[in-house]
Length: 181
Ligand SMILES: [Mg+2]
Image 1 (cartoon, rainbow, N blue to C red):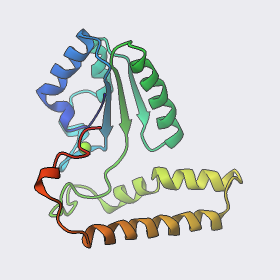
Image 2 (cartoon, helix red, strand yellow):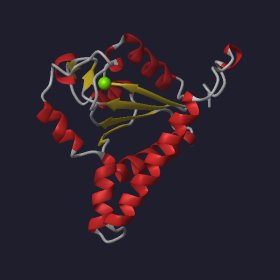
Image 3 (tube, rainbow, N blue to C red):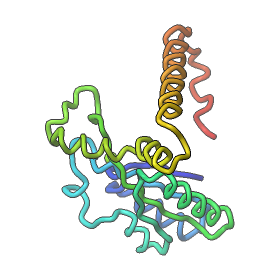
Image 4 (tube, rainbow, N blue to C red):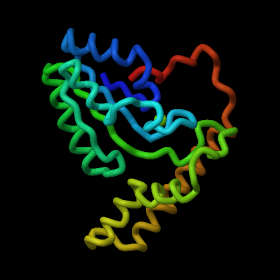
């Protein structure tokens, strides 16, 4: 089982209860903390007594990793190894991936608690842009090919939005379908 949660959730009591029970019963759980630096409008530095959050797993005897969540290959490799370990019955593993939330917590959030410069800096570290730059720099892909992929992705997204907007409302009896994998 993979449990994904944010930096804000890591400060709730049930977080600790879950780590304790998972470790005690050696449950096959991969805890993934997506630390995007903000819980609603609160920066993680102002809400969390000790960073990284992943270090808390140490207190429960759970192996942990604290990684750059915007580094695609590092995320892939870390998760691959973590999943293998969990599947092999060694008990839970904890991964904290540091990343960033570009948008507000909700539609009414106007980002008044951070600067535009901060958001722009992180946008420059976007994982998709980093992979794109790296593939072009290493000659694996040309700028034109990257642009083609972008355009193709835009088409797929537009078609999906179009499909959703033009589909009838689903029946309430289907509300739990595809919720659990
Ligand atoms: Mg968050």
